Length: 102
Image 1 (cartoon, one colour):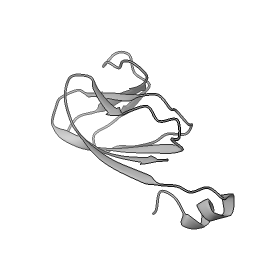
Image 2: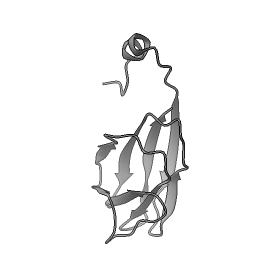
Image 3: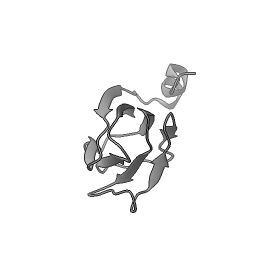
């Protein structure tokens, strides 16, 4: 199933551009996405053998996070966040596939 519909974007009068990124799993905090004022949405698929913890802003840790995405899990941001998106894995094996809509 597509993450957005060209028909829905056309009916709202908004143009949507998708930016794809792969982030390599690491057990230290890393910036998954830079700040973007024009961000309309974000999805993350955790293609790793361990959980991915994410947060919005300056930091994230295994004990201080906004969302835990399990191995093989998917997250769709339900609100617009223009700050950094940071992540950390329990163990550094695998990657995340990130799709940003701007």
